[in-house]
Length: 158
Image (cartoon, rainbow, N blue to C red; front, side, top):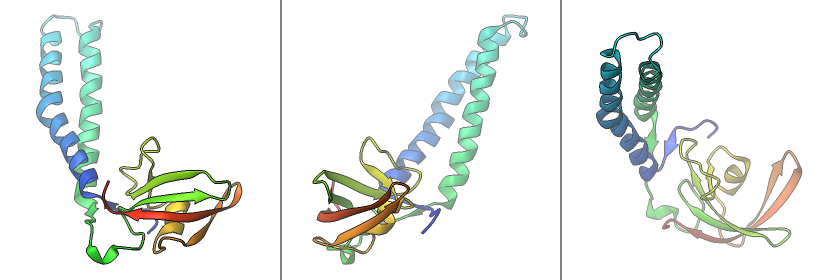
């Protein structure tokens, strides 16, 4: 599953929303700002014009990336056959060997977010969790050595 193109439906919709926002709202505003700044005369010393052109390049670069990326992604929806085992999209509550408990969600590399506890399917922890069930103990090999986790709970609903 290394470098997988999997994504949750929510993640796909978020990227699609970003693409549509940039293309339909942000880009037209910046284009108008650049046109207004260009109408003021000398463009070489016009900070609004220079900033606007730079912002347009950033928007266009992101739009190109999102367009290509969305075409290559595979949406993975919940399947009732997954119940009881850890697969893509699962929320998993685990406890480490020191007693620290954390809740993680296994998501695609385009949507991981450490603040939310969302980890990439490509991460060592996610790869170790896949296929396991409640009460299993897993070993994760990290740069700091081996870490043991005990699986407390699995859910496919937030």
